[in-house]
Structure formats: C-alpha cells, structure tokens
Image 1 (cartoon, rainbow, N blue to C red):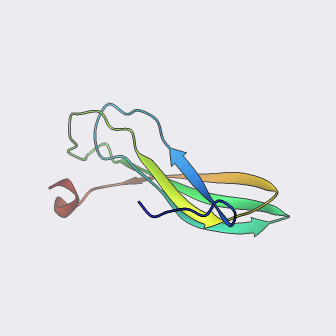
Image 2: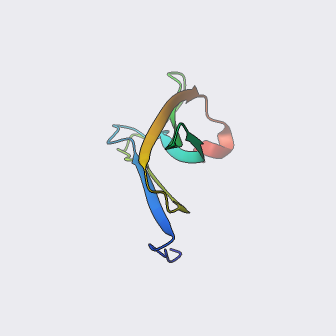
Image 3: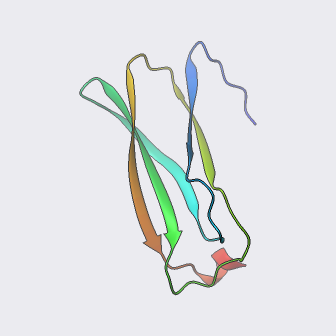
Length: 90
C-alpha cells in the first residue's frame, strides 16, 4: 500500500457492509467541490437477479487517497445493478 502524507492528504473509505453472496463491488470514481463541501462520489455495483454469483459472503471496501480538505465532506451514493460478463465471474 502506498504511503500517505497526512499533512497534505487524507484517505476516504467506503464500505457497503456484508452481503450473503459475491458480485458486489464499491468504488470511489471521483470527487468535486460543491458549495464549499467536498463531495466524494461512491458507486456500489450490485449483481442483477439473473447473475450467477459466488455463494460466499462478501464485504466490499474501497479506499482512495485525496488532497487534504478542511471543511464538510459528503458522500454521494449511487447504486448500479449490472449483469456480469464471463470474465468477471471467472
């Protein structure tokens, strides 16, 4: 894991909690300053009901190193359902 200079950076972490099967993902694709607040965009991907998924539990987590920001930090969550391709399943 890369080092973090906490005098200039911070680490944002997003977790979607425990799920009873595979196929779940979470990531932090972007950030933007809106009205003096840092908005961190979070995308959680859930498997479509037609997907074949692993039968083991998963707890997706994503972390991103970002420039230090003094002010309000908000998370904007988006949930996207998507069918998996063969390459994602194998």
